[in-house]
Amino acid sequence: MSTVKRVCLAYSGGLDTSVILRWLIERYRCEVVAFCLDIGQEEELSGLPEKARATGAVDCVVRDAREEFVRDFVYPAIRGNAVYEGSYLLGTSLARPVIAKHQVEVARETGCDAVAHGATGKGNDQVRFELAYRALAPELAVIAPWREWDLKSRTDCMAYAQKYGIPVTATLRKPYSMDRNLLHISYEGGILEDPWRSPDEDMFLLTRSLEKTPDAAQEMILAFEKGTPVAIDGEALSPARLLGRLNEIAGLHGIGRVDLVENRFVGMKSRGVYETPGGTVLHTAHRAIESITLDREVMHERDRLSPRLAELIYNGFWFSPEMDFLRVAIEKSQENVTGEVRLQLFKGNVRVTGRRSPVSLYSEATVTFEDGGPADTYRQADATGFIRLQGLRLRPRGPRS
Image (cartoon, rainbow, N blue to C red; front, top):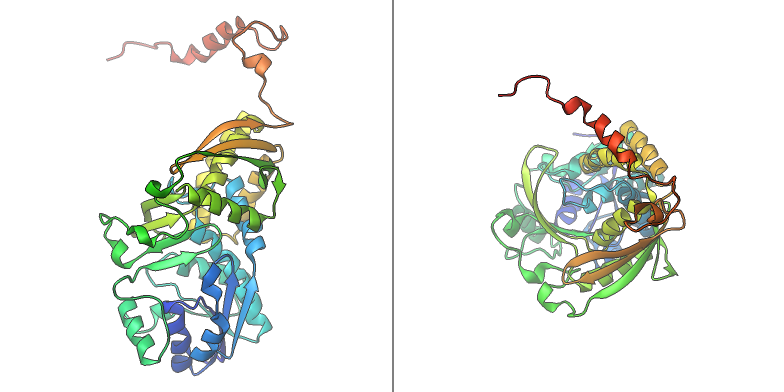
């Protein structure tokens, strides 16, 4: 039997972590400090400390990290154009390192000698949490109940909850898992495990169906400073308030739904359904402002790094030397990415209709097809030699079959 005396549990109040809280007490005969980080779960936090203590926790610590989450985790991913496998905007992946960071702080502050999480043995989150624990607090023991206990499914968890009188919101009729934060809501498992089955419309919380979106487009202007979103329609907003506002506006127009089958780090394919309304708008706008402020070769180099950045975030390596290296390079690329983007939101789509910047690299005088502009800016005749040199290696070197 382990000598663990006190465990800090990453606790959401949902089915899995509610059952885990009680199971830790029964299995390890230890004290449990429940910990929850507010990163935009909204109503899910209501009554959480009372529920944790009623389930057996000696304490429940709730911290507010909404601003930190968006500023220090979401925005760096936006600046790096981090998108996993072309579709996933990494809402859950970005949440795990900030949760783990605060969890180990609370564990130390409350005298815990172990940490625990509710990630299953088949998912990515177990990797994300535990790699962060190893990087930040290697002295703490790690308990992963899904890899230890004899409960085999969420149906078993519901039976366990009933046995100990633990209130849960999941049902046998709708047993899918949901994870919410300021960047997104994810849905997976249960009825969604069939990749052919269409999600039920009443499942979605952030975005309207296209049939219920406004019949008139909405226009907005997003301002950026050094690659970071700072204002909507001229109103300066903190990171959490800006993303929250974008979620409301974009969700109204049905923007940000993604249904995909992704490749998990642990080796299997998984179907996930996501709502990321504000994040979708930010990615579109950020690319647009970069188009007039970022040097061509710098943009191409950064774009080569973006898939790797997304992969590192997805796989749980936020706190790693390679991530530190990539982030320094990406942050350097954003020094000139300042200006405004005008967007049109309509029926699930976000379209760029304009972009401007006080440090724009775009030159109308150079690009125009009309006469005018400095004679030494661009001489069309110079293209003859340029093309001849580029084509030297393409000349035939012998017969071709």
